[in-house]
Image (cartoon, rainbow, N blue to C red):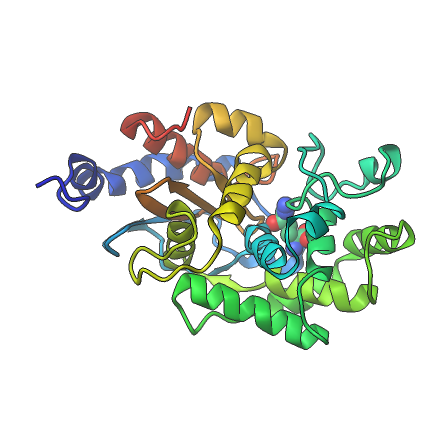
Length: 317
Ligand code: DON
């Protein structure tokens, strides 16, 4: 019977994934661990790990899949989903656009250059900060708690927590994000108190995960909003469709076009070295490799995903 566990692909992964990880690990030396948030600089430079989970809940892990790291920008996919569930499409896309920028993730350039001054998309910092302001909740504690509970549900892990050291470090080194948020407030795009909105944003970026958590969260996206292991629907299909489209067009920052050509899978990276990706209807995948390439994506992680996509024919295109 051709069940996923028994499939040729699964058997090949079990056999070859550890070797593929070691081949890609060689790239780590060319990368740099993020240091603009000082706490992130402590991450292990040569680490590389991956976990792949199928719809029955079986997993294959290789390399340093068990090391914890913060989600950083990967969290933006899920706050977007929560904001869509809280507000609906029209209200969200009144405040953020749907287009890639071609600029760095923390650029404010187009906010002034292109009118109306709304962020181009929800996965750049400016867009994600606006999304944080749209999370329902009377106070910032309630908003942050709703985000954490939503992430726990998707990861099927009640132990997900904010990494307090990273959160403090983010908050203490966020002058650019702060200036962006004030700019957005002045433009009338961001409502509420800037410090409170930023607090929600810093906290969700600082949620600690492992590759297993990312793989499970990705699995829900791979199955269009339903956790295939429990059968529970967590997110409407339409919103998952929106999120996955943004992952393809903007998920790897201003390297998304190249990633779409070389790998061709919906993905979102974070500056702590994580990448969340998926094979639609089949696998959720979490990758970690803290050494980054010049565009801010895990250098060895991208290399490993290129190998997987090419050898297993996983590109959507
Ligand atoms: O705001 C920041 O710079 C980090 N908390 C998140 C950066 C990140 O992962 C890149 N985002 N697209």
